[in-house]
Image (cartoon, rainbow, N blue to C red; front, side):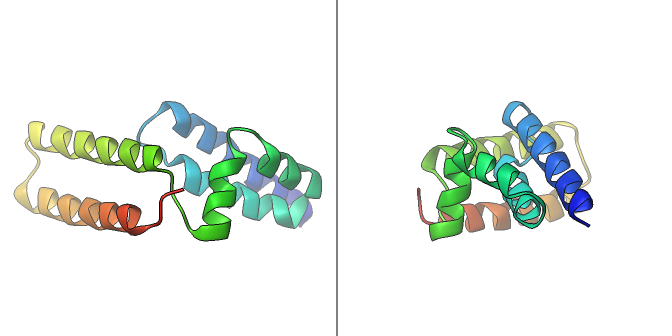
Length: 117
């Protein structure tokens, strides 16, 4: 079972790292998921991830205080606005835009109501 947890952790970590470059892929949630999987599979990988200078601090802030950094909040907001703008430009049906707008608004409310790291 530990091998499966480790494989899922590595998959989550890999996709999370891709999210650093691609604005639509959520980085921190995938890093949190990787930390969860590594905690169940490999103390060495878990310690490495939490001790990493770039990847570790967002995980620790979330685990200790439920906090999201101000820069991450801004990047998420810009990404959400861009994605919704693309949907409008593409001329998606009003119902789809309404569902997308409602969902993205809920995501923004969640992000901006978390404490800042």
